[in-house]
Structure formats: C-alpha cells, structure tokens
Image (cartoon, rainbow, N blue to C red):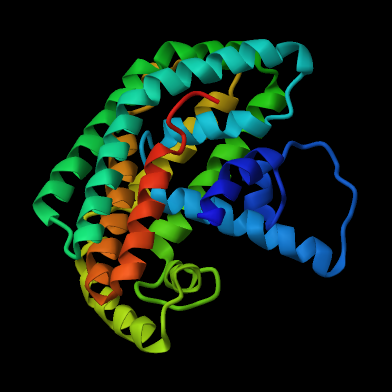
Length: 296
C-alpha cells in the first residue's frame, strides 16, 4: 500500500533514478548533486514507483503518456495555466478509458479475494480498456493541437522526450521483462517483497508465470507501437502539427497488451497465495483502481 501512495508523489516530484526515469519524470532544470546511500534510496524508490505505475495503469496508451509528461514539463511559467487547462482536458478525454481500467482492476481484485480470477470477465474488461483507449485519441485531437500551438520548439522537444521515456519504461515492464524472472526491481521480486512470499512460493510462481506468459505477448507487436510513438514524436516536434495525422490504433494496442499481461500475472499467482496474502493483494488492487481517478 505504501508503494502505491508513493507513486503519485514521486511522479510529480521528478526524482531521477536512471536516464530514462529522469527524462520521464524530471523538468530540465538542473538539480543539486546527491551522492551515497542517501541519494540511492530515493532514486530507487522513484524508479520502483514509476515501474509499478506502468505495470498497473495502461488506459489511454500514448495519450496517457502525454498527459503524464505534462506534470514535470519545464515550460515557461507564464504558460502554466494554459498547460494545466489542457492537461485537465486530456484527463477528461481519458476518463472513459480510466473508468474501464478501474472496472478491470476491481474485477481482478474480486477474483483474487475469492481465490480464483474469472478469466472470461477479465477478458471482457480488457476489451473495454482497449476500445476506450483507442477512442481517447479521437477525443483528444483538438487538445493536442492546442498544446502544440502554445509550446516553444524546446518545450515540444522536452515533451516528446518524456513521452518516449514513459514508453521505454512501459515496454520494459510490460513486454521486455522476462516472464517469471526474479531480478531485482522486476515484477515478481517486487511482488514477493511487498507481500512477504516464501522462497517456495516464489519458485512455484516463477515456473507458472513462464508457462502462462508464453502466449500473453504473442499478439503484441512492440515495433508497431514504437513506430507510433516515434511518429508522434517527430510530428509534434515539428513546426506544424495536426493530431489527425497520428494514427490511433496503437493506443488500444498498448493498453490491451499491458492490461493482458497484468491480468495473466494475477490470474497465475492467486492460487499460490495464502488467504491473508490474497486479502492484502485485493486491497492493493482496489487502491490502484482508485488511483488517477480524477484530474490532478
């Protein structure tokens, strides 16, 4: 629970844990150097919090990455009221996808608490997240055009750098990570630490996840999604921009893949948890379902 509460704080605070996390979170203004364990601890927490965010929240795809990037965009302060207004507009346009994701997380939480996740209900909820995420692109066209119009070339480049950094983190934790891997900072290791798993539980989950995840990524084409991110970046950084020229289908593709991988993880580990661990996990998922539920 504490990890989730840190997430929104750390995203806004812009703590730099790596070049990628720094670009996603931090404004370009220079920060005082920090050294030693005191610097490493918050940096590690920031990186973990951002990864947890991208493991659980997939609605909106690239449109959501844009909205997140506005939090720490080092734009001219005179423009801040306009930027905040456009960010609120984006949040409104993302609301149907966010609500669909909340329904998905609640469905998984209910299954976890019961000891068995209903795959049919979860798959139907995932389809809603993907469809609503595609629709978010069409809803946000004018907002994105207005955002481009008020930003300077330097500010536009800073924004696309952050969007690409969010994509890199999202891809790392939702596609590139080894299924069932127990590397530090990975999903299973983080999960094990947070929920007090025994070594025997971790071993069984690792084996089960490798099997279960084998088919979870077969329909995801990261090259197509990455091409979409790059196309947006190139178009938005240019002097002229029309959001209609940026295709929408990658939003649903990204949202659907991330939601599927998340669901398969929880469907697989739930039978291997104790009743107390399931109760704690269900509460954790419900807390995530309420995260980002309203414009910042």
